[in-house]
Length: 616
Image (cartoon, rainbow, N blue to C red; front, side, top):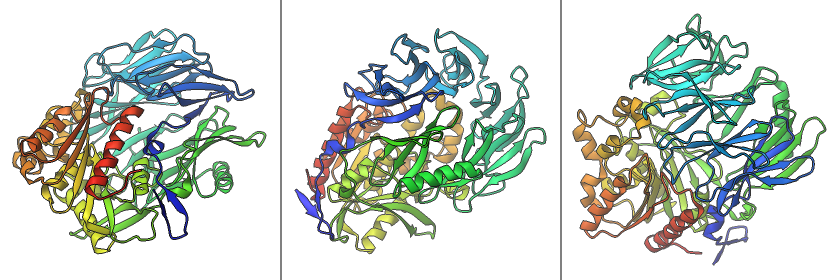
């Protein structure tokens, strides 16, 4: 079935698979010498690594994984690539290395139940990288140098149990650590790697002074800090004076925490930050001129540099918009060559997709809330069926850009409403703290107020509103159906929390350091027992009256399967219409293509049935 918009353009119902199939190619990177480019491409329905010679276009597939997509990869040197992969969504990522001709594949961290985290790829070290492993104790990570050819590893720093992060200088020396006692955070520093750490500053976790990198003389730090201010700004911090000595950049509306740099020229080139959209501010004229050239060359798209070679004269450029997954381009600054490499999802045509528009509304207590509204491509933008889509985290935020779920739902005729409720990050400390101990309360009220705002503006049909979300967003679905049962016609809970007590009892071991922080942000199971019971949907399942679709990965390490089991059992005992999908080879969300297809097919049918919507 097709529909026409006000410009009389036929908008076809696109196949569900077009939105959720694997990309044509993605995650492009340049080799350090700029002679090769690498990328992920589907093979046997899984994303594998390919390497292409730039001069002759010859391509080699260097991995053959079939059970799980490669989660991420990077160049260890000009002839070897390292990559991370977990098993069935358990998030215990293992590190592998392979030559760029596909030979000498080696698992570097073959330890059951151990998670690998990259600290530094040590670009000046051809043989080693620096990783964190929770091999000695699952609750924290020691720092190891690992040989990418042999797997030989040397312990560089043993974690005493309170270090939550490590940082190196520009020579790969481990000289900064961040510690936590659960509530208070300390920034540790040492002049040389063989010296003991000393504490520079200790703050409550609400005060952020996050190290970003060393200055290029390795004497000072660039930090993102909200000390004595509401919004995070980037400063230069002097470890000897133990204070911020120079403001690099601030924005009055949002946090700034991303620094742009040139390792070749040994200078910072700019910053990036997000208001309604992504913005750049440059300090370096050369870098700014490159950006201006790219934006002029590629109008109508957000443009970013995805990768550079060591000489920084060859660039991979990534584009995207709200209606396009975008494309990759190759730009040679030396000879001016500029060419398109690939469209990430060429089967999705922009002219059939919908605009994602920033919105604001005022919550019941006067707080201004930001979000995004995507309307279907129809003549009438009033009295629409709506899918409310609260984000996960909850200490995160929705951003403008291509979202396959949003575009899929809009293509089926639904307006999609995304709310950056209080507690979302990026809007400053006050807004973030306003969400503390407000699960199911003011955080949920913001979503409710947003829905009522849509109804009052005539955009939403009050009888055709559903709510769908994942992780914390899944909790918000259950909370919405429980505490505002007349607001929604249906709900879709994707790996969501139903019982805050069991959530906190079963956090991954490597989250244990932050337990007291979670108690302050969500609630203490002992001190705040009444609060947590009052906002845990499983204890109020008798209030849920509308149909519910629940999806869960059996291996989810963050939101255990028991969270979904509990709410499904409670509703089935009361004969509420609930459908339950469990994927045995998935974790916190469905990553395998065939499982995504199953889930979104069920979503499409569920919403069509309960919102009187459409099916392709």
